[in-house]
Image (cartoon, rainbow over all chains, first blue to last red; front, side):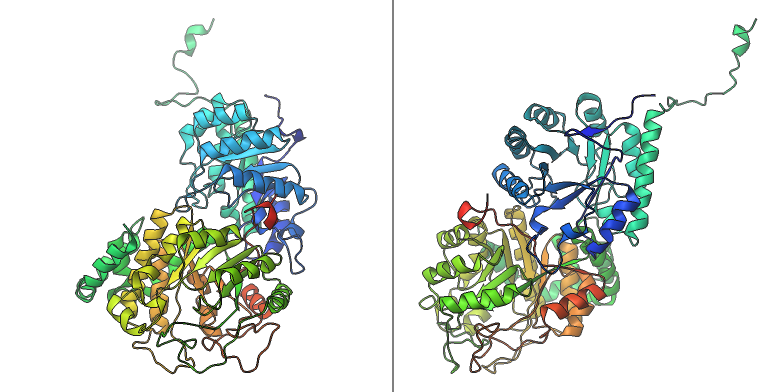
Length: 258
Length: 376
């Protein structure tokens, strides 16, 4: 069995499910989601963080032992993403940053070119950079060169819950890119998270599917279990697929007897 | 090309005949379509859609939750001034109306900002009457210097400006523009605006586009429902929003659905948009453009605002006064622009939202415009 280790920015992680903080009806559900999912990394939009607020702040609900992954949601250019990242660090949110550069509000697809530019600047500045991008080999290679700590390709557009639509492209990234591949966006069902993990993704990030479930905590648990199952399946080396039925007791077995 | 050519075409189109030809089957097809075309939008706005409002509501609610979650973004308006140089026949601030006129001094602006900030709100909409002579661009600059200390996001609802003027305000920290066309019916617009700079239909119509070009992050448009045929105005508003979303994919486009309210001038609406009509418009907007922001103001009463929460709303005002000042500076003689129907405080609004399973969002933006404004 392959050695089971998962490390980003020098931090060893047991859980391969990253969660989010957006879209909840009530942020007070977040601790329960974290616990049920087993997740150790949680992303938060810096634009929603209000450290001065007396009336409740999303940060108050994030368990202290979670690795915070502030994101640059709202950034339309590399320059804006860099500013947000630096602001996040100045506010005490640490040096992990998820780069989101989006200038198309219809599909919310990430701008790969601007993302790579921001990644290079921030990695050089000591950030642990996790860029959210399209599942594209060339962009992924440029992120490797830029100093990214992982690559986060989308499974489908943000918030769509449409599943692993980019499966074949993600598979190429898993094969070709020597960085952790974390499938981010689009995963809507635990079975889809499981499938990504079975393929060999290093982790998945799930927000909308958990936050908009009728019972977010139960859904978080389901995702946690699905990610574990998918990882175990990947590590166990699943048997090959065949187009014809394969008898478990071959008819020509006698030829090797005696 | 500006939106004017589309607006003109829609004004000249036989919308009544088109609506009359739409069948329930057309509406069902529109509801089943994976994405909503312009023809589908017309079907959803037609009388034939009325019996299918529940189906529309189910779809709109799903889309809203998918794209925005169960969150409602709260803001409040701050009226800086009620001087006006226009003669809009339907507005309490009409230059001819004998009301007490005032404009906040800068120390009063600061007092108002402090009072609003104590409620926890972080998004502010500043409004003036449409007197450029009184609420000058320089005055707005001075107000912004004060307001950006308290609010990460400040939008404006003032007289229409040139693109470079909007760009200047963006540099000063303004990140949102609200400007209503009032009515998209050009002939009616001319009658309702007998005098004043606002009489220029096209300059007003193209203002949202100038705001987008100038770098406004959020642009909010709308028609004042009831001035003309509400269905026609709502359709053209939806088309205008769609046009802006396609042309400026980097800008957040929102629509408001203000209905005529009683006001000092006493002019009454030509048509009444009922609650059912309002719901149909909102559902059609959500299904047509699932990511469009939808704002509902305190023109609407508390019960209606609560009932429409799951249908598509993304932004609501709270703790509202339409008088100049009204939060810390309390001039008893001051008259509001219109009478509000929901005078609940911010705390009361939050309690209501939470009781209905929604999260009130106070802060949804971090200013990153420049170092002077607090960015890094």
